[in-house]
Amino acid sequence: MSSKQTYTDKEAFFVDSCESIKIEVLHYPPDNIILNHPPILFIHGIIIAAWAWDNFCRWFSKKGHDCYAMSFRGHGQSTKTPKKDKWWSLNEITNDVSAVTDAIIARTGYKPVLVGHSLGGGIVQNYLKDNHQKVAGGILFASISPYSYRTGSFKFFLKLYSNIPILVILKSLFTLEPYAAVGTPKLVKRSFSKAFPESMAIELQPKFEKASFVTGLLEVFKSFVDPSIIKCPMIVIGAEEDKVFGLKTIEETAEAYGVGFDIIGGASHNIMLDLTWEDAANVIFNRIQERVVKE
Image (cartoon, rainbow, N blue to C red; front, side):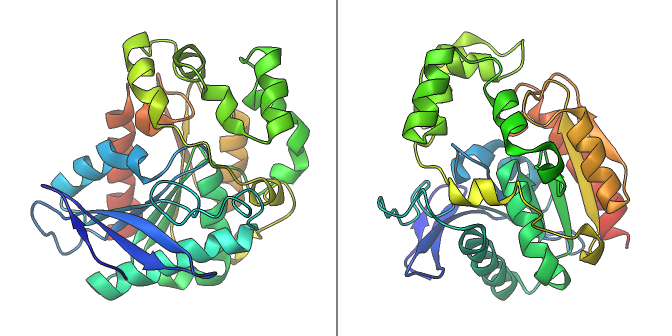
């Protein structure tokens, strides 16, 4: 790990991954240490980075969880390699999760719960198929299904851009930049819940990441994981107004892992940034208590 950057209530440090990549990790220490509350590692999807989990990390740290949020290579303050950032494979990205998880275990002495959002949920599943014994549990949060290959990537992209003007879609496809879908505050507002205010869209839009994975994203639309081999507790959560991974996907994911699921009302795909994010935080907290702490 490299030197730390300290904030009033959090710190940033860097973890060495493969390919000489350094991964940004934001750490939010708990207000009060509660021994049976495992550390939590929050893992983002496309177009965002560790910053997107700020509300969640502050909320869970006040509940006694030691909280961490990471930025994938090419995202946030992690190492950027402009000639490679679009072409990292699923396994190379998963190596970032592995390196950070090992660092958390070394720092705390405890197995963390991994929360993976969207593409991050696919990466969590890819990590758990070989490393489920290293974690206390996995939470798939508006996540890609392990059976996404049955639906196909074409239908995924149709849903992803279903509310976006055709010129923006073409720009995104030709430049291989999903960022085009949130390139203006108006487009940001379209991608969130109906109640999401324009003022928040204006504030949020400059924070979105232009970095994106193409190879890694496409690989999760093949058969990339066998859910039956993942033995740690699994929790599945979706969003009522998710235009990307709707109810059918959430049901499919929950069935694959033999668990129930929760749907957060009034939330879009980016649940952690939407108006009802605290409802989602409460659901995650309660499910960790029920499925992880009590096991």
